[in-house]
Amino acid sequence: MAPGAARLALPALLALIGVLPPGLGGAQISVHPPEATIPRGGTIQVNCSTSCDQTPTLGLETQLTKKEVAHGSHWKVFELSDVQEDSHPICFVNCGYQMMARMSLTVYWFPERVELLPLPRWQPVGENFTLRCQVAGGEPRRNLTVVLLRGEEELSRQPAVGEPAEVTAPVLAGREDHLANFSCRTELDLRPGGLGLFQNSSAPRQLQTFVLPETQPHLATPTIVEVGTQWTVNCTLDGLFPAAEAKVILTLAEKKLDSTSQYSKDSVLAMANVKANSQKEGIQHLACVVTLGGRDQKREENVVLYSFPAPNLTLSEPEVSEGTVVTVECEAQAGTTVLLEGLSSESPAHRAEIRLNASAADHGRSFSCSATLIVAGQLLHKNQIRELRVLYGPRLDERDCPGNWTWEEGSQQTLQCQAWGNPVPELKCHRKGDSALLPIGDLRPVKREVAGTYLCEARSPRGVTRREVVLNVTYHQNNMAIIIVVAVAVLLGTVSGAAYLYNRQRKIQKYKLQKAQEAAAMKLNTPATPP
Image (cartoon, rainbow, N blue to C red; front, top):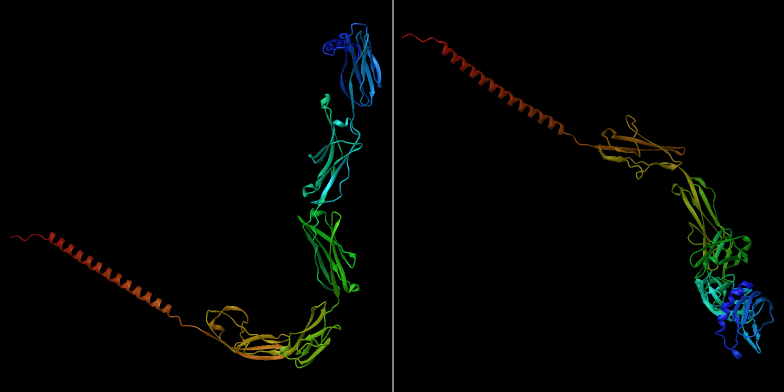
């Protein structure tokens, strides 16, 4: 405090003398301020004053660095600097006798370190974990409180005790705690000393919680796989949290498979496409491991890789003329049984054959050979099919080309006439007499002009065959036009006769009127006879 400031404060200090406890002879001593709180290393001015009626001797007893900065006859101001710890300076005065007044000086400083110790990397939901906060430094400790926080939510509030102070609190982990921020905060409350509330916070730490069910993953895979084929392996596990953090590894024969994972709300699905190699024929070990929160769930299955080529089915000749003997032979790998179409029972061996005399009915016939193999208790089948082609001449029969057709004129009809043969013959039907071509296979209205007897001829490199086809067309005479003509003629005759009679009657009436008029005129013109 400057001397000017000390002089201004003197009246106030003298006013306080009246309220101080009296010493011997009624003299008093006072210290101002009686209590003070300053930061560590700070400076404060202390005023010692007395009401002694003699010339007093004033002083300040302290171990702190001090300097007198102002004085009067009954007061002195001392400056205390670089205050590092709490202290109790004493003002004293000699006024024929000694009097003393003690002040309380409190030093405060903020914690040097506020740290929330590391959290578990992954914390299972439903299990407790411990929050630990360490606080180094900070005074006065009686005013220092440590608060543990989840976000802004206060979980625990405890005094800072010890050096360093460590505050702990158990927390039950929940799903809502996943990715939540935890921290701790110190509160140095100096409001009773006229200062404020000072807070220091640690760096936040993020918690990851998880749920990994006790159930094993579901591993979907065929139990037997043919060498050289590709199959899909699926591994799923439900009830995960957070599902997107789960990692899935699929292995076959302890070799990691290239897989992709799909995540839903609480489950994961891993898929891998696997190709069976001939070098791995036999029993192979397939495994799926789901990892979450540093914990694993594993499922294992055995897959049998087998080799089973299709049987070899051969025809002695794939295309033969009618009447040729054909040999059909089927052969499969050792250890299989074969069934060849045409044999009465399955052959216990891996080879079977039949012979047949090829006919037209055998053209396009499919021969089937089925091989059977048992793998891991499962019955497997492989089939092979071959088609026989038989060359034969043209054929026209009643079933496919009827010899007699009767249709009604005007109806919609399609003439069906099918010639058979291999190669397929060319078919033409000409009417006897005028060689008119009969339309075959076309839907059209029937006219009476197409009626007649046709000669149908089927021709191919294998020969020619012919067949007569008679086409009858029925129809009815149409007398309606004659009736209409006669009716019109009668009507016209009747109308003409009536008109004639009407005109004739008018002429007669007109003639009679004219004659009457002439007779009357003659009478008027004749002179009277004298008497």
